[in-house]
Image 1: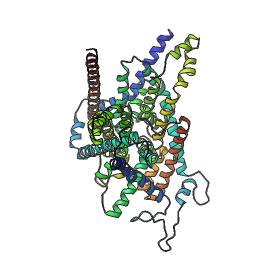
Image 2: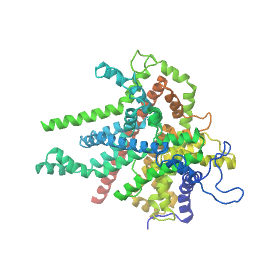
Image 3: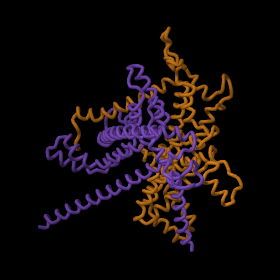
Image 4: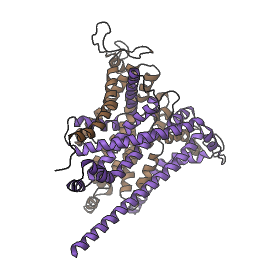
Length: 304
Length: 285
């Protein structure tokens, strides 16, 4: 019989984290959901109650959701600024995840195939920038990619370009910044997967006359599928909600949905619409996650 | 020939990727010592930005606030993470377990903007009802604890899962009470993971700008908030000086921590080996 606390002790141990999560995670989410279904109020009380003060009847308002998907009354569907921002966020997240995979896969592979004695040091070198301020590392790219920045100076000096190219506040700076920040999220699960791989299988493929490229494609890649998917999700999901990188490295053309929520909340002071946008944003995250768990069949324990 | 190419290709790929990862850090360290306010050409060595940093009260105040917030959030996260991990690993069956496990893990995938916004709505609600708390340090600590707890839980959970339950049962058989077992047997075994959870939560808190932006009140700005404000305005080498100090201290802490872990592991292995030797000596006598 494994040791278990008696009822009062057990209730206490479960109760502490449970209560905390209900109050600070579940309740805020329910409030968010509630406010997304009410009307906008005035400056003093930014949203109206869901029941009618005179008749006491409930009346849910779906307008906050309609305006996300439809411009104006009876306007075209899916052609609003909000939908554009959602699509742009998904697009950047997808591109970032692919770039991280292209850079990170060979990187993880070569770390996994290096001598066991140097592996911990190499991994630590991957983690070290990760522990220094994310904000500062993003900020540094602002100086590196500026019109008069280091990259342009080097390219000018080498004679590759004749005049500075604008990289800051474009897709280039956005993708460089996001790939840079999220690369370790791709490398760690891939490495964990590749280091466990039995490389004798590759040797067997060589012995049977397979070319290295074909062996890599037919043996290594399929065996590391779980790592690829995990890394992809770990990059894709936080990228969709990214707030800091578009604020620092993006221009008005590169605005993502996180920023739109912020602006609705603090600039337009439209709490119900900000809430509705946030609820839809959760939907965007939940759908790929559900697909992921459906295909991997794993319990909901994301790795870090 | 092919193998040679393979080896050099591997080395080159590793080198280039590390260059990419470290370029911003080198950049900030170098230009923090620049004598002028531009960051394309190094015009000469100077410490003026470090001097400017010490005189910048916003940054200094923000730093101390961040240290306080991260310390409290780190401790609260480590304690709650230990509770949550213990519940998930040891109590296989209780009412609402699925909801519990979902709530613990959800902050890992929730966008920070959503966490910040929903907590802000809760705080406003509480404040309207009770007139307390004002948005400020306390509310930021609460927000960061939610995030830190989720990450810390993963760390403590994996340690609890690999821990040998037999020693707990041995303690029970010898008459230890459940809380004695926890504090005298379980805790020493998972202490390293609890400390790692604390460090992780501290770093997350010290680094976070989004949740703090939502939950801070007027005049209350953590270091990342101050830096974020400066960063949006343009180039400011004072930030590079702050970054350099941070890079140096983080490097020292990370190296120190891994040396400590390596030493602990070696010590444990030595003790195990000694115990095994003693046992064989007794058995063969």
